[in-house]
Image (cartoon, rainbow, N blue to C red; front, side, top):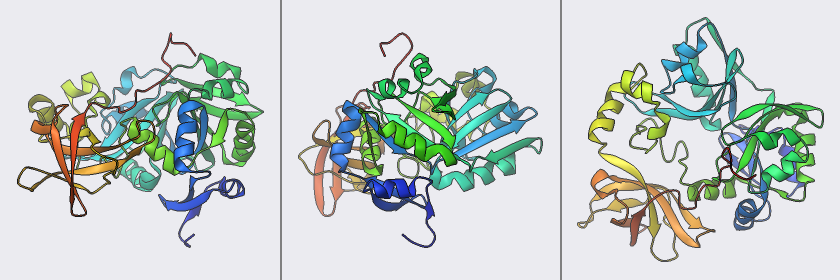
Length: 370
């Protein structure tokens, strides 16, 4: 571990469980415990516990905070109901993505979760643009866990039965084992699951209690990445950045209908034009022939070998037992079934565009069976 790396509240807990630790987002974090493929499959079949305490948890409050935030986000906060997390993003004046995030109305304030590697920049971005009547509190005293998988609800409801009433993208305040927690039915694996915000001082006892449930095992960063790739979910800094617009990234759903029409957020002119005319390039899913995965940075080439795009995420899918990837390609080549050539380390790989997600999402929606 380098001198500049920060420690998670659960650092010692991870090490006692035999985690292999790596540097990520400025923290020393567990990449795996028993192996990435085994952890990936366990999460798909049962319930995996992820430590995501490196993420930034922010409380934003003050007079007209919703109106002020709408000047920075393409979300419709005016109609955002209490306890309903919403996926959104901070944007540059050119329409590039500063960060993607989740925002929830909680009484007289908003709760925002941002990426760990960008949280200091996000806070500075917000503080420089919000009026002085709006306060941004970085909730450094809070830790964050994610419990993901088809048996996550069964395991968590044993400790706090009320969470069974939550459906996908709903949240509330609960008490489990005497610990006050904010729990949302959400996550970034494509599976049913929960994200649990608790005081850092209590997170080890809660993590241990969750791990005592027979359905639950600890899962590292490696499987978190392969799971979100199978789910077709982009990762900030890889599949999107300030040089990428929400339309190029195929994240149209994050642009609320009223905001698309009325604007009033950074980059609206460019985004409106791309919505109307189509972007020059687009994020797509790729199935790669053979068994060798292509990795981030591999080049998409045309018939003459000219670079026309780039792979932003790639790996071997444990569920499909085949290599998959996400890439930006010219919009003319973005239709499912289109043949794509990828150059990597002197070799050319054949691939084809496929719809995402690669593995169907299994979110628990209202009215569905638990």
